[in-house]
Length: 150
Ligand code: HEM
Image (cartoon, rainbow, N blue to C red):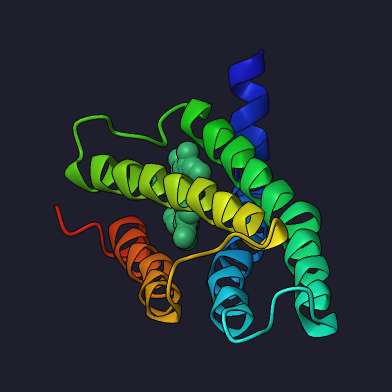
């Protein structure tokens, strides 16, 4: 019964998976960018406090729920019969990249806390480089799911 239900819902599950991953990616691209700008600001300044509010809202109101939704719909897709071939290489690479992306999300949350408590010591260059990580992971993931090279 559950199986038939998921098969019936498949296009909808996939549509919601894609909608949520767009929101998740938006947060993953923009949070480190906010940290790049935040590095330039004087601790305790009005601008710095405003950045703290933007960072909190972006993480808590958009990025965290979007990650949870992406995982939920992704797992429902995995549970849909006939969708995943566990012997396919592309799927394992995608899964690894998604785990790395989730780890990056965790790191970005910890960096936000450092800014919040005015104890960031990482240089701006660190966040500029970190900013490229989600882009790279997203490119690999999309090639894996769409091109399926192996
Ligand atoms: C969070 C854990 C995730 C899981 C468990 C997961 C799992 C899945 C599964 C099982 C499918 C269905 C594949 C098919 O229909 O053949 C799918 C589709 C897709 N996933 Fe994910 N996914 C996750 C995260 C992501 C992320 C982060 C991205 C992009 C950055 C992504 C991009 C896509 C795309 C574009 C499709 C549609 C592919 C198509 O048209 O067939 N997924 N995902």
